[in-house]
Structures are given as structure tokens and as C-alpha cells.
Length: 202
Image (tube, rainbow, N blue to C red):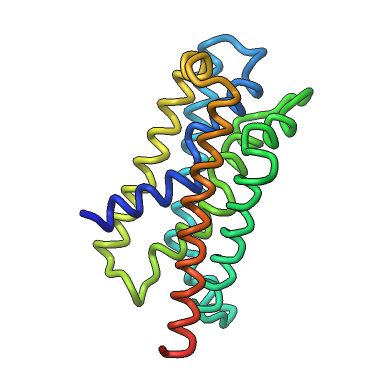
């Protein structure tokens, strides 16, 4: 149970459902409520397909190009750490991705599905948390279900975007993104240490 909670927190940090709300509002500001609902559903489904692909095929691809998982774990941890630092010290997710959407006739694919929901950090997490030699098929399925539950939260928040944004504002979303960034930095360091331990057989 604790592992599932930790996995949920990890995916919540890298996917950042609350940080997606201002992005969704910016992208869909010109549309009526019915179109907004269709965009929210499409964005959630596309991001789910992208992340499930990484759950299923991510490690297979690494094996095919002969990259040891420990190396990917270390590299992934470093990338996640840099991603976390950008969340903490740099532009927050809403600030950065609202700029991508501003003035453009964006679709649910960009910047909503990728890179807002199915972010690089989420793709890496999908691979690292479903390693074949560390987790059996049931555990990988449980991880996939937890990941999809976070995406369900994203979809619900997009449907309630206007109300959520009025409640927390851009500043609130920015603060939450920075807190999630701190959690993600800790997880990233743990991933690097685990990769080093496995590579050197410590």
C-alpha cells in the first residue's frame, strides 16, 4: 500500500494535474463549454496512450539499443532533477506552457497532452517504475492503474478548470508546482543513487 501511495505521489508530481489547469484555460479560452469538454477528453486519452506506450515498450526499446537500465535510471534521475529544478527556481509549468499556447490555435495534442500532461518526466517515470527485473507483471499493472488514476484526476480538473482557477489563481498553481518540484527532486536523487548502486553492484 505504501508503495502504491509513493507511486501515486511520484506520478502526481511529474504530471502535475493542478499545473495543467492554467494551460487548459489558456488553450481553450476561445471555445464554448462543449468543445472544452471534448478537448479535455482528447488530451487525457492521448496522454494516456503516450504514457502507456512507455510503460509497455520503454524498456524494450532500451534493451534493443543495448542501454543498461541502470544507466537509464541514472540519466533519468538527472533529467528529472533538472526538470524539478526548473519547477522550483525557473518558470513554473503554468507560466512556461501558457506562453506556448498564447496566440496560437492549439489543439488538445499540444501543449495539453504533450508536454503538459505526458511530460518528459512522466515518460521517464513510466519506464523507471515498471522495470521488468524489479517488478512483476501484477506490480507493473498496478503502477499503470495508479498512473491512469492521476490522468483521471487531470481530466476531472480540466472539466472543472474555470472553478479551480478561480479558487487557486495563477499564483496558487505556481506555488503547488514548486512544492511538487521539491518532491520530484528528492525522488530524482533517489533514482540516481539506486542506479549507481545497481551498476556497481553495491
